Length: 61
Image (cartoon, rainbow, N blue to C red; front, side, top):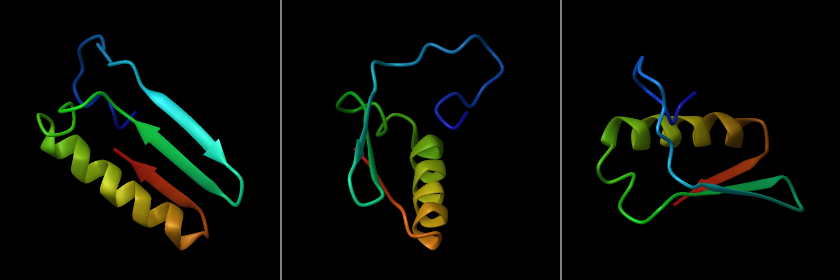
């Protein structure tokens, strides 16, 4: 899972996932969470590119 990058039991934040019409998904994380996890941010950026390649918008904040 992209949000859990280590081998320990995950302590994931409260997240919100929204599926909108028109092949669009939005992942919302607590403020500041991604700023403290630059590798996870980069993995989500890469994931967004892959989704876009198949015609789906994947947004996260």
